[in-house]
Image (cartoon, rainbow, N blue to C red; front, side, top):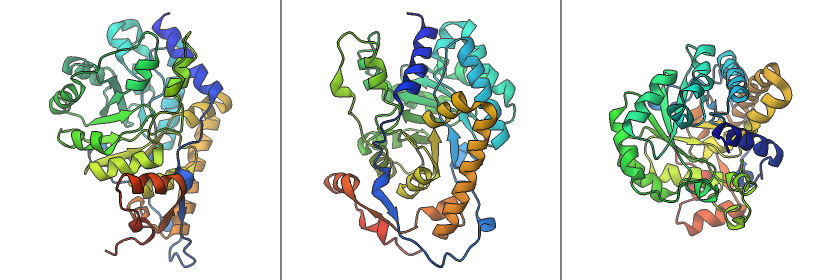
Length: 351
């Protein structure tokens, strides 16, 4: 099977299977503030994300790459939507274009359509420093995502079977590049243990990318004769993965994995994310509603965030991190068993 065909299969399976909504974000309930003391006009959506310099707390996360003309058109649409709404965008894995120069245009189109926007490149943890440099140059990337996808590779019929040296390669890339490096999972979550390991490198940010959105084990199982069913419910749900990352990493934490609306974004920010990535939901809107519909959805998301922040009395994205919220259900049980403090979510420490 060609790489382009496999990438289009990923997109089609993602659209057909949808998201499993097992993020545990619904286990976060905010304490209502009847006297918020602010108005919608007082709210600022610009987050603090260090060297990533995001203007919005939401960005289009990696979803497509190397799928030929169809993904070229989709990437072009996403880039124009990102430009129109002022949000950042990540491309899918660029390894296809490093191996086949004919695939480069499906990535470089993003920079052509959005010359001044914030764009993240993307490679797997098998990449070398030289490949990372080429990937950044290809799209004039403002940052480079290094994705971790062990479970997806193991489920993929033709996937990798050994993962030695990944941390060392990531460390070398982060040290060599002039742009920030983001390490992200692909829907199975990053644990505190992994976050602590990455803290020892020059990685600028980690994306928790938890379980509960597009399930790449399920997608790859569709392509297998003998399914590895045990991987289909494998992983750290998004809400828990954000806490795991925040507790183990002192720099920028991004939250993603099944986020679908402004409510999910605000909950992710309360749990410790500095910004939030959305992929599957934006892909669905792009395909079903077209470019104008996607732009309307993103603008609506920004409007909803301002409404929610006003209700919380949060003037800034950073203020959401101290809004009282009660943790319950499976998320509470998980965090307690993992040894994380939970009381501070409901009764935040005073500044």
